[in-house]
Length: 364
Image (cartoon, rainbow, N blue to C red; front, side, top):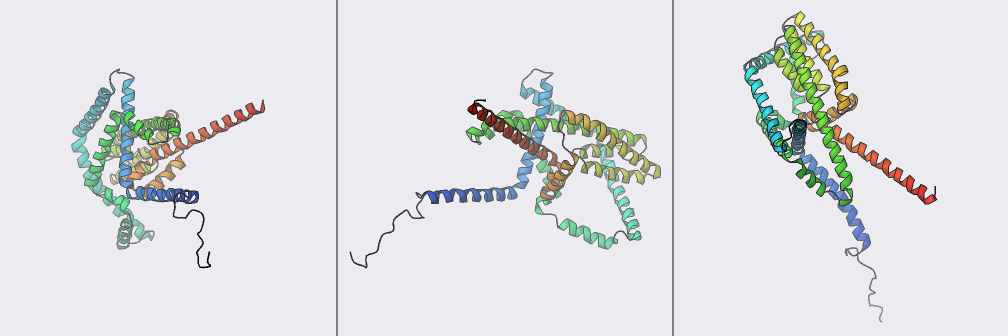
């Protein structure tokens, strides 16, 4: 053999997928690429994902009503769901028919009242030197509103809000018709070995969601009715509208109570000093009853979320996802809590089984 003959290199090429090293590195790379793609998809599809999750929340409400009705009426699920939906529609239509004209008038009056009260407060603060002048304040507000990202801009129009609400109701209605189909579909996407554990976690999430929403609805009804009655007794203007707003905002703990309190006090002082004091007293009495009597009673039967955890989740969700994230912060936090608790239980069970196995092997 001459010296010019090239010696062949032995071993597989890095370009050949038969090489175990290449296959192992490709698997690692595919995992990271998949995670990056998943995060990118979540960012791009955050709006429809929130709508779907809101549909799950609405479906849990309907399912809770269906299950509660099933304790009394031994009929098919479809008929019970029909009764729940018709009952909700009759309640909404009846409430709007009885109080619609009054509420519409009060909405217009509330807007002008809040504008006047806001102007008075800002002018007083400007004279005290605490707040910039009106022109500076308007520029600050414009800059703040301009900094809102595209994640929350879609809720700024009435058409977008109504469309989202309609989609949420449709998704929730379809899910409530036969939730087992969707549960089996979700379980099918999980590996076979993890399906039993996933089924347990999914079942607990459903129970937690139903209990959480039942407690929220009870608290909303109690706060709305008590606020309406108390404000009406004190002669505070727009008592019915303020009661409805308080009840609706009660779905968002902490922040909702603060917003309703500000509206209540502003409207109260528009009617005079005495009505303003009455509005303040009403707010503190209702919130004290809700915080120290109603919520602890409901929390024992539903989900006990620490206030600091709830408020922190609301701040993060509102910053990331806007108004929709703020409204859904509690359900999302409750679901994460259930998943973490089940993971901790599973770890303890595995440790106990390992200890028993080691004891048995040692002959103890």
